Image 1 (cartoon, rainbow over the protein chains, first blue to last red):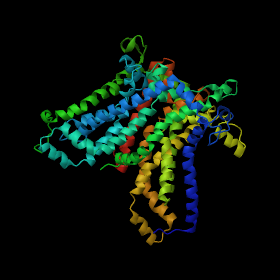
Image 2 (image 1 turned 180 degrees about the horizontal axis):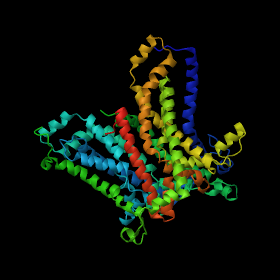
Image 3 (image 1 turned 60 degrees about the horizontal axis):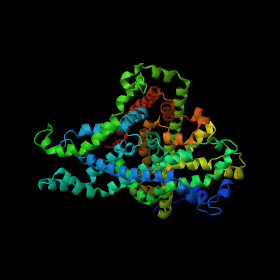
Image 4 (image 1 turned 30 degrees about the vertical axis):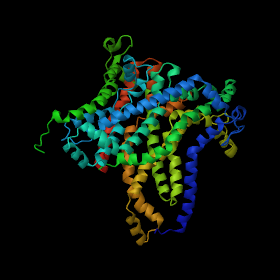
Length: 293
Length: 304
């Protein structure tokens, strides 16, 4: 039982209103863009649309899907997301298991840990990385989008901590006595127990790949090879100066507004779809990573 | 254990080494592979002569960084934007977590959390597209609301340096504050309920409980978060700035990372760009190491 004063009751009402308003502010811009994307071109161009479509139409979506570059980029995005996530998870699980052992059982562990941690804190930078990729002949290749980001040290640490704290040592010892090798122990004991953590990290990795745009911009030279996020970056975000000053161009521009809104929404849609699953995991994941032993 | 001295014992541990191997190869090629390329910061690198044929210039590029007014401005912009972000990303989630902690209706609390965490998962390409649309001075929804409710004339939010900084800070807080509250909510969940019961027995009302129990118990987490974010003092957020800026706001909004990008990939000044990037990387590295040591020393915080 908590004792409350009158001023506290007033605060409480005010608090609910404030928090509700803040929460709405977080999604209202997205709702607005969604409404624009389903509106008629004239209404959108004349800035009449608020939070509900005016002259409802799906023309903007039809026009977007008609663009072959858009479909190509959608395909590239799905490919990099699946390939990148599978590759990342295999590597992460296989590294995390040995590194979750103690120094006595696995000598050399410390060296590996430092190599991975140092890479998290310091890197060669944009230009040397760019030169490396181009010298390796990976320009315009899907591998340039998945290999350099295959190992995320933060996810590795999460996985390592999960293995260390959530898998009973006795299980492994029993398996070792029965003659099971390390590979078998990893795939038949650790991986099944760690499935929730693996699912969580996979989702984070998928979101990361779906959202990545900069690597596509520098490593892909053809517009047809751009992943969706990079494609959106070039068509939606790269600023046409007509937006900043009033001239004849801006009118043409405004008629594109609904199409841009539709493209933005399609780009955000997969994130919105996985979000409910994501939310279930990430609170746990973060607590897992930050509070140790 | 038979002896305190560890043995490699490869006969037993080779499977463990072989599990690390594939990841190690990828790490060495793609993370460590670019590092020798840093030497171009001390060269006058030309793509056609390569690392071996380019002339060595010692610290010339670093002297340029120190003397060139453009780079000084860029470093200053980075520092200003990043520091303001650090402060607001510490204060806002802290206050928000406190307010959320006073909510007793579980469904309401969950809904609020669901909505405020969402923007964190959207990329700056998506959010940049949305911001360009709603901040458009020719009738964007923000412009409309400001003029119809307050009679404010259209503002060139993304065309004026000071407004640009303002938009960058506010939109960054908007995107990330919700996610930032998670660590504080986790800390709140760890507070022992008996403390509040004891306070009630002693006659403390709800305000006093907040001030004397909740806030002091949240402060250690705030100190950890604040300390760790020191490493970001030169990270002003490439993705965000890149997707929002334009030449009109270079004076106030250009940051180290965007500058390096333009120097290198658009103007072809590979060596100079690398030198600027190295300057940032070294300072950030030192700060991160210091920050983690401090967090470990004062709050016993460790990530592994």
